[in-house]
Length: 304
Ligand SMILES: [Zn+2]
Image (tube, rainbow, N blue to C red; front, side, top):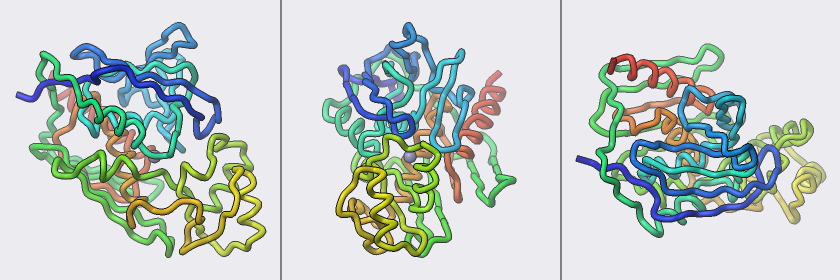
């Protein structure tokens, strides 16, 4: 029988939130068997926010949790690292609202934790097992998610942004894929035109152009690139093969791999590892978390 696992020691990260720009100190601490993943706001008397799908309050730009009026923003990359490495139980202490974005990937968390290995606990890991096929089609877009019974967690996704730069990309994940080297380093991405809108709306305050891949999705001139770069304190930025030149891609399909990173984080909100084969097309946080909540409800009803 597979046992539950927690982290071996405390890990501390300090950095800016992508959306609020607020500097947050975050600590990942070991937790007992059966605890699951919980956040604790040390600036609010240690208020607890459990990482479960029924606590999702907003999933438009990032996954935000809320419990008893207390929020935690941008949980997905940290939750992905924990789920991807097989951490069942951990307490995450934070002194502000948003998980630091760091380099826009899950690598800083995954590298630190996997360097020490995990602590096996004296309790059997509980899985959620899908018994019947499940299909969700989104009304607003043509995104969809299919889940099928499977003896393990497997996922395959396709992105198609109708952009000649990104094109159609796919990414597959199962137990044969090394999460740490293949998924965790893949950074968040956005489109040049989106960046201008977000900046104008006062969002992405913590974006500094090193923590996101920027896809240039329309004709731009040098002055426009300079203006956007200046908004994010970046210098010597040019357009190179459809991307802003300040970052080099880790993989040709880094965008699809980052979507897989997000999916793994969002599906971990089921609160236990899922045994199912997921196929997803053109999905994001909104649909991932909706499907996770639907599956959680369905699977907990099956059990009772
Ligand atoms: Zn992401």
